[in-house]
Image (cartoon, rainbow, N blue to C red; front, side, top):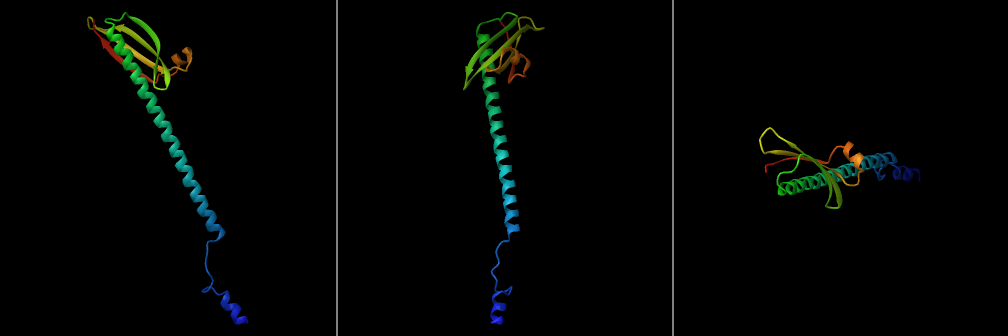
Length: 136
């Protein structure tokens, strides 16, 4: 009977599985990989949102520049307004100034998110800036 017990527990005949330590290490590696993947996906979503906002703000600035050009020679000074573009509203500021060239005016357009208050919008960095030139 002792010979049977020895054979039953010999290293050759014993089926080998994963130890608890090996399973825990595998779970740790898997958890670290999953955290890295979730973080990467979050950063990509944030970058996509930033690029969308930048594109929409540039379209707002280009639209404002086109509208000002259609009016002819704009007066020197500042104009402000709001515009709906995409899913949100945008605040824009257009500063018109004279240039060294005769009959040429420079327009600097800054675009901020519309949800910001007027004071916060002036202090915060604009989402987009555009410089345009107009000749009457």
